[in-house]
Amino acid sequence: MPFQRFHILRPRSIGRFAVIGGLNTLVGIGIFPLLYWLLGKVLSVNALVVLGWTISTSFAFLTHKIVTFESKGKLHHEGVKFTILSLTTLGINLLVMNLALSFTTMNPVLIQILTSGAFAAIMLILSYLGMNYLIFLPSDKK
Image 1 (tube, rainbow, N blue to C red):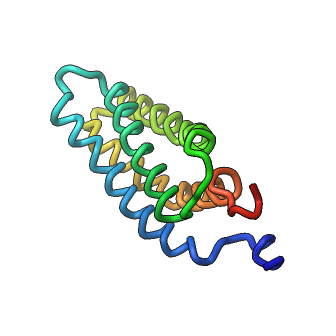
Image 2 (image 1 turned 30 degrees about the horizontal axis):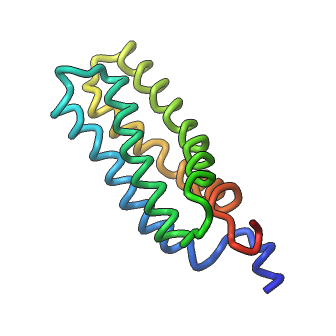
């Protein structure tokens, strides 16, 4: 339909995005404490943030590609675009983590949970728009 081609949001994907986004948030928040507990003695906090980001971003990409947007696009092309979009969140995360560690005595796990919670609403909106318009395009827009 021509109307859907220019529609800002894909209504079928919004509900799935919320559910999968919630699952991905739980994975993203949960992975850092797990890694910190398992590897905190041998890896730096920055290395753990990057490792956690890599695991949660891979999980998020696959669940959004398969479940949320039911994309049939090329894995490599969509993966590169998804990674570029996600690198922004990694940069913000590392910046906040290092600032918090420099100026407070807070535990890194608590910092990570607070950071994730603080940016959740903003990232939800930006992630949906980025995925909807830049990464997982409807088949009629490819």
